[in-house]
Image 1 (tube, rainbow, N blue to C red):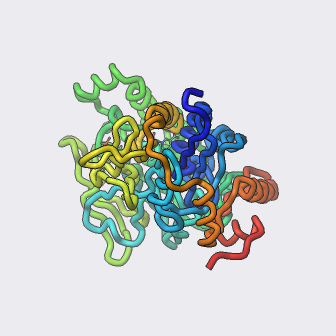
Image 2 (tube, protein in one colour):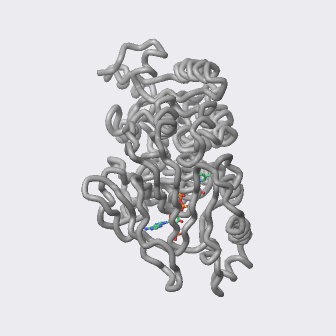
Image 3 (tube, rainbow, N blue to C red):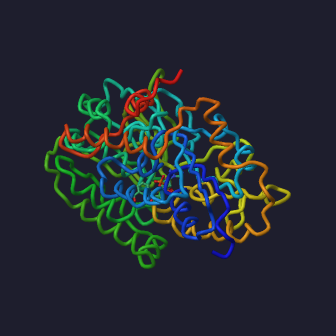
Length: 445
Ligand code: NAP
């Protein structure tokens, strides 16, 4: 305990980035108080509102992330939106260190005509809907939806393609809100096309996630062997990267599989990029252009739903510098930097620091680096004019209806009970009104 244990820290965002940082800071023993502020009522960020409902094992990482709140130094403030309920400046005045770990919730744009038509959405919006994010618009799938196009060759594209293509009844035992399960059950969707602008050797899929597609019951995977042709540069990728090798191998095996006549299909298309979304009042298809001269196949894919899974993008936070191109907050070793100087006592971690890549565990070494910077700065930190207790008093005065860790446990118990009724995982409550009712609060205006 080099620095004594009287220090205070605030973490904004209770996703994996913020909660790994909480664990790291607790470990130092330097803090008497670490408060975590989260905009949604429930914790865990992308573990709850990003990891697909049919991946319960990965969602189970929440148990590891929750461990920090067993410490008396750590407190949880759910349903507190920094920038609305409390300002960054108010937090800076009250804590020795403030770390921002709000991740990325927006989608990158394709930049093609027609992408704003109804029926064209970003993956983050679709994922937020099917995982039950309380702030996500409740999506109405097109009534005549038989075909969807998913653009992108990363794990998010695979998640979206899998959730849309799989037999909806298999989603009943998952955490998916019931309204979403019912919407998928009612949809006549049977074909999902995944469109990649480069080849199999350059795809960002990780191997277990890719292989899973081939194991789905009642889904045929369709791959054109001609698109798996490797040029010299692809051969180099395959020789040097195991992931590329596996992707090429797995897709090769699928290209030789005979179709079983399954009622649903996932089609892979490589070396094509969307150039226009067609339709007058809603999406009717996607026009594709080859990105390699010898690519044949459809130039127009008829579809009623287009999902852009081409990467997440951050949004600016009041009071913080922001790099609009990368969607990140500029930083050095986790210290937020403006054009002129380091913003004293303010740190950033997770996707907002390094961009939208890496798996959940990548946030752990990231958090360790940021924690080291925070710890190194504490001896020279300017004294605060307020305290965490002042912030709590402000939240109470502002009637923010914030949730404590005990409130979260109440919500969790309710979700577990709802899940048991369906013989499965806890079912995510996707609206604030129900959350407040479950934890015994009057509804918010
Ligand atoms: P990603 O892995 O970066 O993949 C984005 C994909 O979009 C790439 O194939 C990229 O192609 C393509 N793309 C970008 N701009 C495009 C454009 N204008 N037109 C067409 N295609 C475009 O991102 P992600 O899928 O959003 O995943 C984010 C992170 O979360 C990744 O690290 C991922 O592994 C992780 N994740 C993990 C899991 C899991 O482990 N189960 C699940 C979901 C997400 P280029 O390569 O050509 O740029």
